[in-house]
Amino acid sequence: MAPKKPMAMARRVSLFEREVTVRLAPVAIEVIHQAATILSEGGLTGDLYSGSTMLTVDLNRARDRISDPPDASTAHRIAMLYAADERCRGYARRIATAEATKTAGCALGRTLVDVESRAKGSRIHLSLEVEAERRTA
Image (cartoon, rainbow, N blue to C red; front, side, top):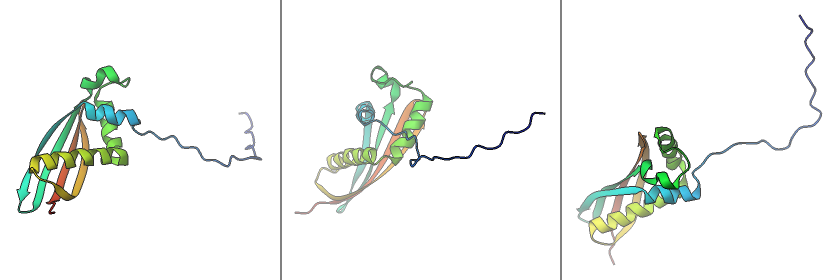
């Protein structure tokens, strides 16, 4: 058995810790939303609006614009990253607010939007739950 070599002593150390980060590319947000089909429902009860908007993104519809495989693995990764990305959440809130205003048929004031994302196969499902108040004067 060969003798063990002694551990090397570090004389110099880096001042920087490196980390690899994966997030959705800015253009990905556009591609995702352009490939989405939108379904909204909801209504007013007095001055309160309650509803939901579902965005369904089939990655196969964007196959010609993406280099990643349009499969379940990619969809799952997008769903995980989407939920944590404030840029995506902001974009989703704008879509949900516009859809809620259209569905309510009136201007809405303070709007709260809850964003959930999940994947099933090569599809991404973005569920946007909306609560708002009718804007008065």
